[in-house]
Length: 417
Image 1 (tube, helix red, strand yellow):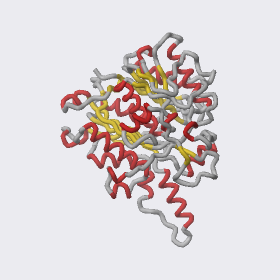
Image 2: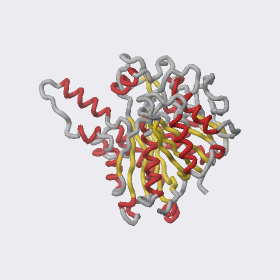
Image 3: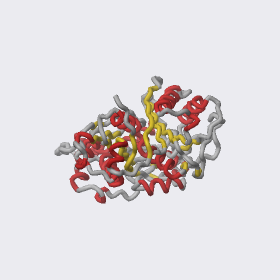
Image 4: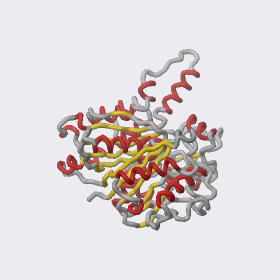
């Protein structure tokens, strides 16, 4: 089977940092935190009372009335970024040889949890006439964003929703990359969306003791690699990327942001929620992805780390990276954009893919904010960009995501030439 080159021709983004790619990137470069006290519900009953909420979201600016009415918030986020990505790519599906040449692979971890929570509460509380909304089931399904995006654009090819917890959207990116590389599609709209700032989600992660409890200073709560980190900050949003067969993109004169050069997935096979303490699965995941790209670790300029700001996870990831470098001198830099966006769970890989590509395009590595004193357990050979962005030529960027259940997914992006 001939292997095709896979390029990125369009992007869309939505998070607590902004409602499009430009505003997200500008905020990330400037080290802006999106965390604040939760406004969606009264969180006083929980130990964690803050999150990285999207500000001033108006779905009607891009979606029609029926799309909004019939979809959960996570699907609205997905559709919203898909519109931006499609417009950015200048892509018209009707010009393809066949609508079956275009597909959607869209990830989420929790799917329509807001819908499920709302419908169950209303059913239980309505003693006189307990009933469910007819759209209850289709709204909360985890595949519905993928389905509705395909319907919006008439994409009749590959269509499904991978779920691998916080590695989900990197899994989607890898699958999209592979299907195009294998000649199974010419265009795939991929990415992920998550709307996890709900009572069930915040309460559940609080019970796990996974969230930071810095209620007095939310903007400083996500502090990857720092001595005083105490858990992650919940974030929400989505990001979409148009992956395209290079020959197809060239033929239509598309602008190209970067090339997807390699990807890999592994499993820790270790624990339900904890990462392998030595980062064994993460190490092999990165190694396999870099090898598939035909590169070595010395050629990687930037790693957008998974680094959620948890005591165990940050250390295990940096141990894996250090092992990958084998003590050899390199010019690789690392940063954790979750320090600003919070953790978007199943959408984390998608928004971080956008940041990785922008780092390549602009020669700027966004910072890890709030990291004031590095944990001494972090290997000394790891160069972490803290507090301020670093101007640097980035030819190759690696993005990591790791999820509950031991799922690992890494994607390699490189400068297109």
